[in-house]
Figure 1 (tube, rainbow, N blue to C red):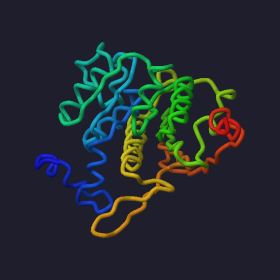
Figure 2 (figure 1 turned 135 degrees about the vertical axis):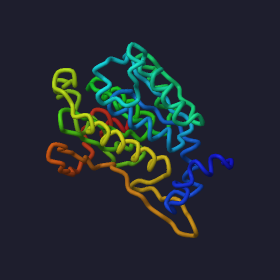
Figure 3 (figure 1 turned 90 degrees about the vertical axis):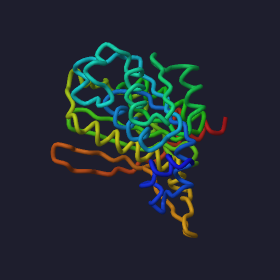
Length: 268
């Protein structure tokens, strides 16, 4: 790191659990964010501010006036602009040292698989089950940790699916594709603006921990001769009721019969 980076990221470097080694890992990381809306906005802002070297921001939608109530990545003068491009402009102003790659079409198929394969961590910040399941399959195939968040009305949830761990569940273990419920969209049901900020910020926190090697089964960085072990949300689902501001934690085991990551699939 140069002198400017040492100063910019000094408050991270001061943390013994991060230090220079951890910040270097962040600076050299590539993160894929699918969705530049309510969740992707705070997640992208904090990841860029924290110094992630390359952010791939993928979203096929354009900025609408109704988005501005919660999607802090976008400004009023960006209405009508592609969300990925609007987000790139905001992040460039926030931290010009972060390279932002804007993808202005919906990622799917081979294009999605290619981006997942290149990423160190994947963030699912989308709003529909079909895309969530596509992201999950690609993450399992390429053994990439996936940070999944959701927010609707006053209810939020966040978890990590880490395909590098032998006993870790995947998204399909929790929400089997064959049993998928109807999508609930903000346009129809509404969403409490700060809720997206809470969940999206937590997604950024989990992503940074995974980049630095913090998670179940992974050792943290050494600083001053000490070793630190962090813990990710792998295998744990946090549920937030923001109206009453209460949290619940639910254990998520791997389903041995899962069509995506189950025992039969792993043995192929």
